[in-house]
Image (tube, rainbow, N blue to C red; front, side, top):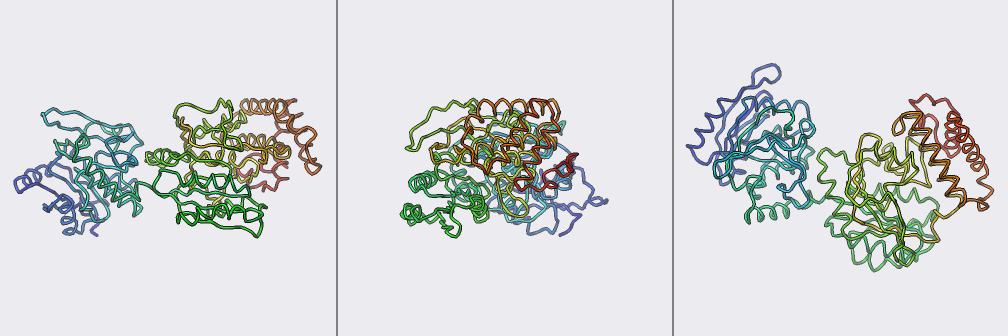
Length: 568
């Protein structure tokens, strides 16, 4: 590769068109690469299609940077090449840049994308010109679909000659993404004028006819695996064979086309395996493992094993007594595929409550929103820890980005600032995933069902005690790290909310039902209750730290970098 060379590859309709395009290129400013004026070579390439011409031009040049220009565009900004090179310099994983792009919806129709970015104006068939500066975006915005009239690449990947011209550049972006390269465009907010003028074309983003629809269907069929990333549905099973079978049936009923299902069976006998046998035989995308060595002793280990064994970039933990509705994964993956900058940690939704027989239960939950909404981590988690409310929902409700679950080289859930929590693993997981600036989408549709029945551990008094203490532990961790609770005033509000809920809701569920083994934690709860009432917040923090250490937390891990690192 010639690092200081730019190949401008013109893809004209004919020789007369090539002359006009060559004249246009002479108006473009030659950029500087590595302190020297770049060498620019102009190549006219012809082929049966534009993709053929792009491949022919690519093979004729050893330049690292190749700018592909079709006859359907006029360059307006003399500094265009300089701008493209700046994107490559500032974003080393970028493989292609252009003037206009968007997110790529699951159906491949980029014209209907929720977000568009770039600086391009369009000439209509009647000669009128209209602009489209797109959304403000994030500087040099990452996109998954891109207009192909003018693009530059810094890595050679063959152009796909089997897709229609309407999807040539977008297919190239998909191929680059498979090779771990990004595609970017400059955002409208960074530019004072347009970069290029797009001439009338059946392949423009404004196209709306049967030919475009055929091109879309062909693209989707060819790149289905890329458009529908693998989703892993993980079912940690424990006894209750009827519930397990119903949960598996709901996973198999998903209308999303690329799913694997893993079942880790922690049961004390083989009833679950027997109940699932017909479904396992009929569905090769379901993997089953019986964990008979330590049945039921460590549900967390079962989940860790499932997370480590699955292959999906996105995971949905389906607890064995819950249900997914058929459209759940498809609906939630649509949100992930519109997330160009990969800031979205998880998607959740409203859910139904059902009893042991599957009948609906009226459960009024003021946090169940009827409209779609995107939350910042601070906004959502501040409300959760200050009001002690699971606004997100249970594990079954949520579709997660699996890479964010890595803890020390392995996958795990239920850890917040190093504090491993067992009774409310869902809450601690949401707090952990959102603390680095990620976002969450809440969908107003009911996409799953959470089953309530007498055998659930959540009705156990010892579990209620553990949850009560852990709500205070989460509040303290959020405050000492200044992550979701940043002021003493906010911490005081959260402590008072915890005291009221403990007195009104949680203590009545524990009275006279706690085993003797919980006496040390009962004492901690009583002291914390008194400290909050006395507004002795230093004592509240010290008691929460003592509680977490008693549960096995490493003080340095949960408190490192805070003024409380030496508190015991």
